Image 1 (cartoon, rainbow, N blue to C red):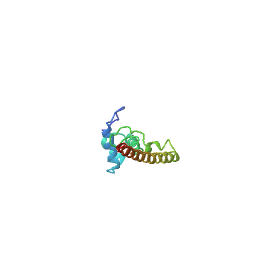
Image 2: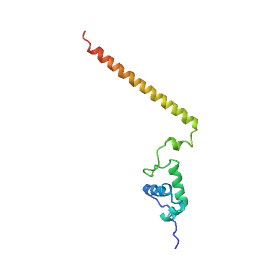
Image 3: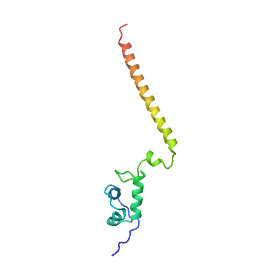
Image 4: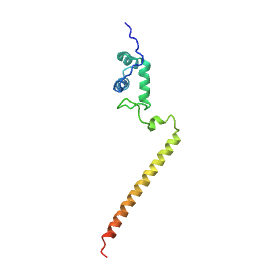
Amino acid sequence: MKKTAIKNTHYTPEFRVQAYRLVIDEKVGQAKVAEDLGISSKTLGGWVAKFRNGQWNLKTGETAQPTENNLKSTRSKDELSNERREILELQKQNRRLTMEREILKKAMAYFVDLPR
């Protein structure tokens, strides 16, 4: 008896993660996993693609927050490297300013404690 697909079936995020892990981690064929789970191979293929390109979070199985990985398709590598450079420069500036602030705090404490 052949199983018929149920339209508009909603699968839990945990189910999608487990299916993905069977294909990727356990190296079970996609068609075999789909057959065993009673879903279409095309559906499972879509899930695998979404996990691989970062659209879905592997921990929760839900839509991932935008990250550098899933923004690559919309941004060029030059834009990303320019942003990385800017972030590194801002972090460096932040460390320098923090250090200067600490020095000024110590100097102020020193001058406040001096007897007049």
